[in-house]
Length: 367
Image (cartoon, rainbow, N blue to C red; front, side, top):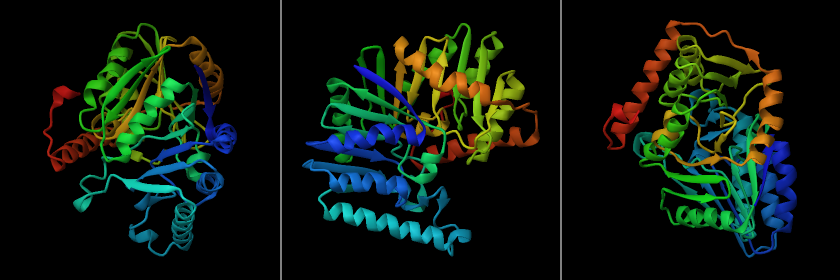
């Protein structure tokens, strides 16, 4: 099994483009966002040109409501002509893909009054000819390609077959929860209904940390932030790299509050948005995937959550991400503030509201 960590959109596309060009039998794609800009057109044109008989793409309904990180139906965007052009461009490339034999399916309707909007299929996957698979955090849109992020390329038939099996369930509209062990990899597929049990493995790793935790993520909330606080309280060095400009202000304020009240070393990535979801625990366990370390991934979303103990992959992470990003990152000097406390409360209210709106009860023990 060969595993490569690909940093940022350019690093991802430099490996994906030739793999797509070599596809002969099957190309399967899954993404939260697909937009008719350079990133989306790149994938669309590659699929249109491909001779593979089975070419399919699953796109979450999110992209019908949010584009270029903007809510399409917000009053301030109703007359945004650039945004309207991107909507048209997206529709046109999808039509051309369908005309060329690419089957496109949207999943996860938003529901009445958007009650189900937090329950997204957040998985990102490209599987080619049953031999190579990509998973991670990058969507097919220019603003996502511009963010600091990570995709994982795995060249292995058994691993790729496992992800294709899940893809087929998703294609049929079934969100399954399952897991499988491979060579130094424990891979979890979260179904979005009862993610807490599988996420407890991550919380257990944090609670079992002895020396150091390094994590980079834009969205860290309870219960992960609470577990990191507990680790810090017992003397574990906890280093968090968060974006200097966060597209979700509640998560920004929350982690500043937790760092200030919990003695954690918070740093900001100075080159805009980091969208990475990665955690290295004691240089022994590396956590990667599509799952954020937030309450939405913990409670509601379909996700990939991967635990890696292979030292060659951990060495790649330290060389390509941890070491250079710690050189760039700046101390955040988090402060105890009313806004941080309020963000803490608002996130809890949002969690309770979403649970109730979707017929689930609030269970604080689940955190």
